[in-house]
Structures are given as structure tokens and as C-alpha cells.
Image 1 (cartoon, helix red, strand yellow):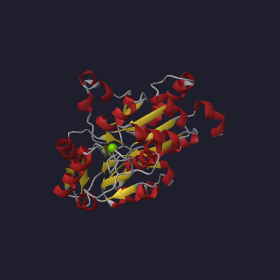
Image 2 (tube, protein in one colour; image 1 turned 90 degrees about the horizontal axis):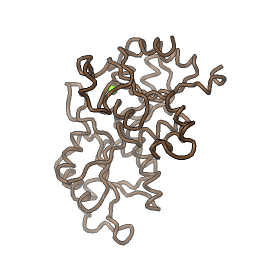
Image 3 (cartoon, helix red, strand yellow; image 1 turned 180 degrees about the horizontal axis):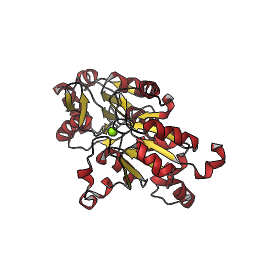
Image 4 (spheres, protein in one colour; image 1 turned 60 degrees about the vertical axis):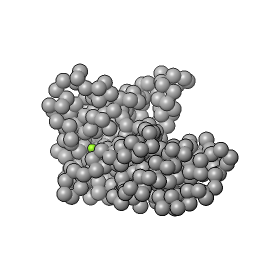
Length: 312
Ligand SMILES: [Mg+2]
């Protein structure tokens, strides 16, 4: 029974596109990987930097492809943003967070459902001199959240710049500079963040990979909330040793070096690169030439090969 193996249970945090599927097709060995992981009593969650789609729609796609998935097993950068704004930031402020949100409807709905007070760019600009401060000395808006927004324009950029320069915290859902559109590669959230960064003079605090908020959300869903506390404390503190042992049974699996692999390495978790996505074997032929946090601990051709290596 899976429960009997709880002390040796493995936990997986997997990216989706380029790891589990490409467009509408499963990658080789993916179905076998999850069937064998289930037999072993492993637990897993999927993490994606895509802030425009909901966990429900990803779960539906995976289930349709033959990998039965509940929405609770899917975490997006929008969910990580909502968790951060309505959790630690709201606690710090002692009230709901007031946010200018530049992004698609999915991001706004997720934030609103979490209790974030949302202001659109037009309102925040038109009323810029009238928006009352929530408390003396505080900016009228606490944060500017920027996600992928296909209606992004100069007026949104100008509004974001205005509020960040007035002291609002600059938050980015994810740093991916490109996004795959029907016609090919086009601008991703990271391209919009670069524009806001250029005029505001501030770097964004990243919610998605390789940032910590998405990792904390994933560990909590896996029942490993205590591990995220230990990671946040740099591995020190009470329970650090025991949690270090659990840490070695967590594996982050992804296809991108700068988001997925850095996500794991930056927070001290084992990282597996699969070669079914954007990274080519040539790019990792000389790992010593890569930035340290881009170096995977394990490289596998695909999930099928990883299943054989992990489960025999
Ligand atoms: Mg990917």
C-alpha cells in the first residue's frame, strides 16, 4: 500500500509544456511515468508559469490526454500571485491589498477571488490624483501586478510606471520572455516586465518560476509546507535535518534552464531536465559553462527514461 511507503515517498513538481505534453500530444513515456509513480505511492503537482489559463482547464487537458488530474494538482503563476498578495502581503499590511493589475481576465478573476482589491489601468490613471491613500504615508496602490496581457499598450505602461515610481511594489507573474502563439513565437510576460522595468527603474518580484511563491504553493499542496519554511530560513532552524532528508525525495522536473532548473536549484531542491522541450542536448553539453543555478542534477531524454531510472 502507498501509505506503508510514506517514509520513502517521492514528491514531484513538474512543468507541463515540453515535459508532459507538446501542444496536444503526450511526450513519450509520460503515461507510463505517472502510472508507475502512482504504484509507488508518489505524490505530484504540476506548476506552470502560464497565468492566462485556469487549473481547471489544465486538469481537463491532462485528463483528456490520459493522465487523470484534479484541478488542485495544478498551480499557475496566477495562483502563486493570489496566494502571496492575499497571504503574507495582506498580513504585513493588516488589510486587503490594493493592486493595479495588467493582465488577462483569468489573472484578474483569480486575484479578485482571493480578496485582492483590483484597479484597472484606466481607473488608476484617471483617478491618480484622487485615489485616497489607505493610511498616511502609504501609496494609494500597494502593488502593480504585471502578467501576460495581449491588450498591453502605452497607456498601461505609463500607468504602471507612475504607480511604481510612487512606491507601489512591482510584481511580475512570470519572467518568460516569449510565448507560443498560433503563428509562432511572440512576446511573453517577460517582454512586458522588461518595458515596465526600463521606465520604472525597478526589478519585478517574481511570483512564478524561478520565484519562491510558486514553490511555496506547490510544497503546501504536496503536504510539505514545513519544508518551504525550512527553505525560506536557508535550511536552518528546528527540523532542518529531518526536512533535509525529505528535500532529497522531492524532484523538480522541467525543460527550461532559466525557469524550471533555476526554480529548483535556487531553493536547494534536486532538478531534472528532460530533453522533450526547449533545451537541446548541445546546450547542456558543457554544464561548467552554464550559470550554476542552470545546471540540472539529472538529465533524461524524456519522462519514460526517467521512470526507468527512478523506478527500475
Ligand atoms: Mg516547459
